[in-house]
Amino acid sequence: MVIQQQDTILIEEFRSGGQKAFKRIYDLHSRSLVYFAEALVADRQQAEDIVAEIFIKLHKLRENFHELQNIRSFLYLATRNLCLDYLRAAKRKGNNIKELQYLSEGEEESYLDTIIESEFIGKLYAVLESLPKECKKIMKLAFLEGFSNKEIADKLGLSISSVKNQKVRGLQLMRIRLDVMVTFILIFLIRNMM
Image (cartoon, rainbow, N blue to C red; front, side, top):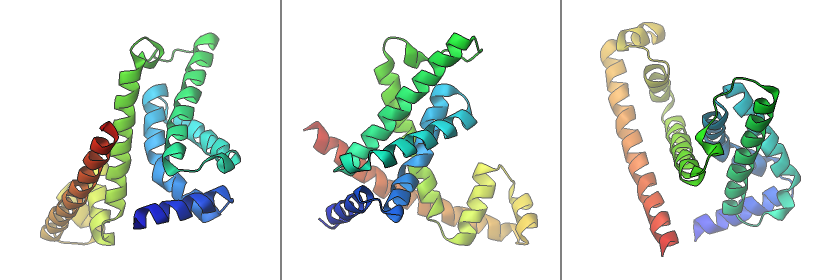
């Protein structure tokens, strides 16, 4: 009930042009959308440009949305369409861009798989960002940048055992938060399947 009220407030603020509401929606979806677009166009910069353009369209059309789920659906569909437009234009120009399975038959299953993967990556980053400051810094260095425990310890002026302890703590917190998230996702999926 409380979540529904928060969603209703967010959508109303968004529809009326509230910058904080727009930023919240952007923060909720941008990483997943960039990952999704990059999987389609195989170019990070182009993916970021496409997602930026989609959010501009979303802002212009904001008064048409009455639920957060509608916004999410619009974002993925519009991103997919703009990526396909980009690929078709690149193909016409003769650029050597890998032809993706999204342009062939059977694209819907791959499209859905990519959305699910993109959403999971987005949630994973959100959980990582929610970690305590020092723990988050160590987890990013270790898992996103590939630093060893010794390199992290040297870089941050910590002992190797402190780095190991923070990594264990970070993994535990992430596992707990992801377990809760996975449970909610499963409940959502089961409710929508009935």
